[in-house]
Length: 631
Image (cartoon, rainbow, N blue to C red; front, side, top):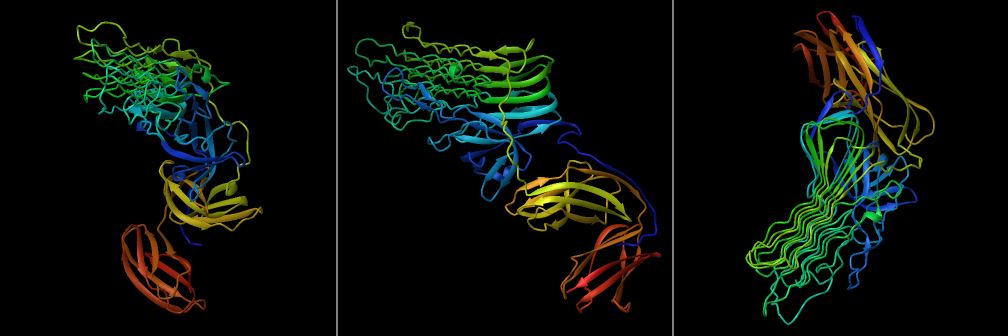
């Protein structure tokens, strides 16, 4: 205990400060974090993820399966029809209960409600996304998400308990499923042969690559005019256009290559991506899908183009959304125009999901289909237009402007071309209301490393004494004491080891011997042996004090021969004497040192012999003392 002569005046208040509650938070760029889900254990309700370190207990997350559907793969008009979703499109919001960073395991506070299939189909592409929460937030620069890369991305999700204000755009255009990549064919065409099949190996280039959808590519069948679920089909040999990507609605079919005489025929363009309307988009059937990619145009002169990417998925929960004339968009990407080869199809529109109580100010929502590619020079096949996407809200949107048009079909720019075999535009998307975000609803035992009974701060002389108690400890390593002057940015100031696994009530105490003047916030970070962490509520204290002198020696105990650090606070400059006494009161050693006003760290050697000593520090008539054990 430090001996102090001056009185302290304290005001103490314990409060819970929710994340983001102190101010309107500016947000822009990418605010989510993503990791792939490697496996799901439905028995113990845990996920194995590629990187668990991005999460902490009580984080909000979004679990979503992007792909994995089974499609008809027969060589006929049914190629690409979805025969089993197999978990594709399943999603739910959840709150992290606990995690094991070393093993990559994450568990939720509620059970996993959806049926996911991470191992039944190769590359099922399930991702776990960290979802930020705000009290009030303002979009100050374009808010977006990484484009879908085959493993993660393509989704933006956030929760705002108060008002989300838009001073900039939210943009996921072209962030969904990828368009078929253009690859130049080195194969010779023949006017004697027509290629009508619904699939070819894309590497063979008799059929250009299909646009991506909720079904992953089938080896040897990733090219050709058949669809890849809602992904548009690729144009067939020779020089036909790719189909537009679909979503709730169907994409447009690509254009044919017009021929005369003995020119190579091009009668089999890519089919427009399938409609998925019957497979989800209701609260009872809450599957959602990114926009399908457009199919690539077939070409052999390095002048064809790939398909446009589909639009991404936007999920926003907010009390109020203030538009300020801004736009939220998740449209499909238009395909790049070509010349004397087949053009790519436009990407399908994505999904905008708004669980919002009130809308204010002018706001535009866009989930359009991308345009198909034009062609030039000869009469090659242009690309089909992508389908419009989905706008799904919890309440009627009233005066909010909505755009869900399908993408325009590409055109043949050469004046002598006819309209025969023209590509089709994408069909318009749809607007839905009554949205309720899917969330795990069955409570499960959330076994945290520590069950905290309470956490408090009280004055103790010139210090702030922190006390807490636990009802249960499991696999628990340590408590880290954190302090902040603002309640937002915290620093570690101390650490206390856990007392081992037990169901008994255990009590702890730790003193901050250099507390902040004025207002300060304390919290505990509780860490288990596997690296998982949880946090206590905040404790707020306002401290007004007149402090002349204080010391904190560390480490304590200290090994013989090691240098001792003495953290010292002095109210003013002056010569300071440090004196060692043994248990009999005999003075062992004494030194003097000049100190300056404020906090500094002095270093000195303790007595050489092991034992318990008292370190007495005196400056300008003020005296403090601490016991130091030398081992």
